[in-house]
Image (cartoon, rainbow, N blue to C red; front, side, top):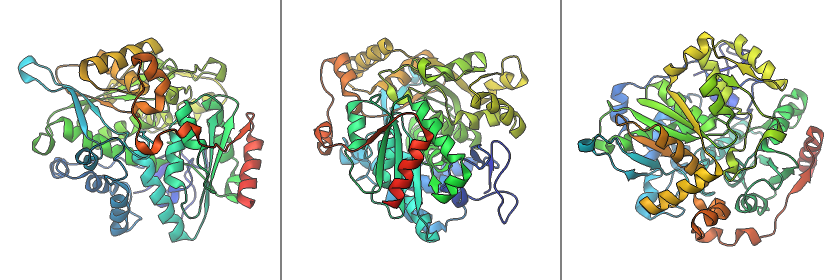
Length: 495
């Protein structure tokens, strides 16, 4: 398997057909500023779907990932995957039977053929170390980084930006890892108190938290600017863990297969049934993995994209206009992990939408990178959009409060604010033809303030995370400045 850039200029390698998985694992962005994708989407046959249906999560992850990774020995990859997906790692807030499933499916409304109801479910993804779905990919990424660095005898400095969950997930996956330092940017005082405490209370020597006086998009722009400074990137061996890193997206593809099998009858089910997945999405990474699973042949009938008040993605799927907002136009909401107005992974999908033409992507993103927008309405590209199965919607603070209350009252289930956004939009797109599976984003404990506002009570926390906000915190605060971040990286490396 070889990889290409969405902007068409892969780095020079011994094989001119493009770099391999391990060659792109540590780097993040391609040298031309584009994002990596496989040069083709491997297809999954009906025979493979039948065989994969009964697999445990780690075995399924191995089967899916071998479609994308062929430069790690199979035995080594199997060990890495088995070490990642354990009941111990994904057992926060679960009984042992559920923990062993890794991503159990919870039916809110089971399928009822007699009433022509296909069912409504939540795919539980948030019982990992930091109580967020991003642990599903990040724990594997940490193990892959350590393995490849040891094999190559190298070190790396990870630079990332977070709107809430990526930061803690990355830091918990990489803390103490040999050969890795983490420099994580976050918007100052714009995450929940729990999210801040998860990150800033870590005192591992290889973890460096940097709070930026601005929005997430400001932090994300800094990461891209540093990554595009090729001399600095090479000197300090800058790598990425944000969802611009292809390995994270590939790892997230796995749970779409697992969720599909669970929603269509488990081990004894059929691969003829289509399923809809509703995905809360700010940076487009999570739902991009669903798009890729669908392109591989998984019978996904519909991908329902849910945004909060920062609805740049919903606007595109409704109108064909992609109009990133300035920081001043980006709202601070009660689902802060989606307070994003410039979705990094969206470029991967548009690359497929425009027929994988890098010249078109270069032209469109030249407008975006210059602070503008683009409009595909009225073009053959936008006319193709129904082929990809996307629909969308948005949710507001009032909507998520109402959804949290309704879900707790009707089903006895407490959900977080982002999952509430997904469930609200999912309800608008349900059909009797296919089950609707909402991807869980986080456990409610991460957003205690809003849960108390909605329900008048605090969500439960795993014992190890009790009182985390009172722990000593260590972080630097800076203005929006690329140079300031570079200086902190240099100081951290030479300390």
